[in-house]
Every structure is written in C-alpha cells, then in structure tokens.
Image (spheres, helix red, strand yellow):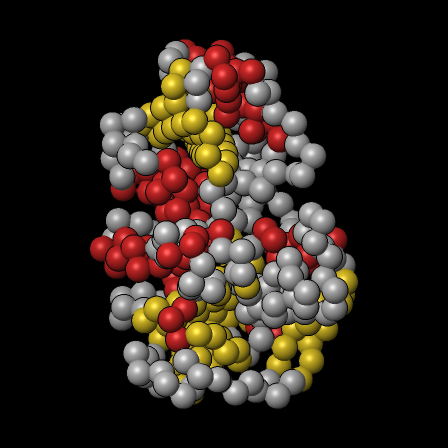
Length: 344
C-alpha cells in the first residue's frame, strides 16, 4: 500500500509498505476520505506541535472515513464492505476516567497521527490501516465518506457543548471561525441559543458564519470592537467558546463573558500563555477546558443524519491522495481556506 510518511518540516515522502493484518477485535480499513487538521499543518510546517516532536518518521492525519476491507478474529458487530466513520481515539476502556465516560482524558490514550507518544501513532494518510472494531461507526446511506471524515471535528465541537451545559435561551459568543468555530455555531443553533455572535479577524470566515446562521459577527481586533460588542450585548455573553487558540482571544473571552458566565477553552493555547486571572474571580466565571472529545460519535452521527447539523459546507477543496503535499500547502495558504480533504 501507499503511505505518506513525515520525516520533518515539509519533508513528506510517499513510500510503499505491506498492508497490515487486523488482530483480535480489529478491522482493516480502506481509507476513502481524510481531512487536514490544524495539528497536521503544525507537523507539516514545523515538524512538531508544541513541545511534541516525533521520535521517528510517522504518518499524520486523524480525520477519516473508509470501508471495512477485512475482519479480524472476534469481530461480530461489523461486516466486510461496511462504510464507516472512524473514531481516532483509542482509550484503555478500564481506567476510572473511561468508566466515568471521560475517555478523552484516559492516561493510556493513543490517538491517530499524534507524536505525543513514543513511538508516535501512525495516522490516516495511508491507503489501509487497522483499528479496533469499537472505533468504527457505520455511516447511514445518506452520509458520504466526505461527511464521515468530518465526524472528528464535529465531535470536538459537540464535546465542548457537553462541557458547557445547557445554552438554551442564552447568548453565545464564539471566538474563532475556523472549522471548529463553525461547528460550534451549528450546535449553538441546534441546542437553542437565543443569539450567537461569532468573532474572527478574517472577513471571509465571518461571511461564512453569517451564511451558517450567526446573528452577528465582529472583527475582534478592530479598534471599536468592545464598543460595538457592549452596545449589542451590554451584559456580555452567558457562554463563550474560545476556539482560536490565540492568547489575546482567551483574554478577550474573560472580558466578554457576563458576570457568572461560562468560558469553554477549546483552542490549544501556547504552554506559556498568560491570561488575566483577577476578573475570573470578581466575575465568578466558570472556566472549563475541553480536550478532544469523549464517546460522542453516535450523537454526532444522529445530528448529521437528522439534518440538525450540516457538515460538508466547510470543505474548501478536495485533493487526490497522491497530491497530499499540495493539499497541505493549499491548507496553509490563507484566509479563504477552511477545511481541506483528500480522497482515495
């Protein structure tokens, strides 16, 4: 099979390797669609993400869907040929976090396309891979492989709302209008938010947010931003989702939250980020972290199938698998790009 293996910053090489054999309770998946995430771009641009530098060449990518090619011993829940969306998070299933339904913070977690581990875990940009059968969710006929590969970022957004609690009848502020921010907007609407305001310095992304149902959009770095925001929402937002991973946005979330409000930190901030803590105390804010996602794939599939959430409209462009380097370069290029996928 063909595999794209990353050797360093912008050093991506196509290689041929044996097709893996599924073990007990595993399946072999023929990958059909795979998306490019911000973490993939960081590995591609810099050869690392944050403090995590791969200990050896590895395969990036963790947003994928595919078709079951072979069943390993013991697999009875899936059939050969089934179309599946693949949950890239492989938890232990037995620790206290997993048993509490918080598998995303399992200390023994393995995640596709991640260099947080030694050796790093090979990801989605290859023709075939094996996965535990429990990580594979059969796609309804109405959902395409393209939509199946979007279940992972949708799950990130859904999990963030689980962390926030009910937003019914509330004013919701979303900082960052990338893929996750756009999906946060979709769920805010689905879960009954009274009004949703989306902030992003890029005009194109604000335009997309308006088309996808935002009541208001603002440029958060404009000089008159706070004046305009306070005119619209003088009491502030009941719930703020920070989805950009920018330090100034994390500080802005604290400023824009109403007294007694909730902030959910979804974007990955630098390790040395400093944010003002005193207003958190005086405004008695609840500040929550939201890391990846728990066992929510079934919920997200239901949301897609019912039409509550539209996933595919964030895809900017699709490339052939053989053109992955060009796809990554295109994804790096700017404001007009949202989600890029490759098809096989």
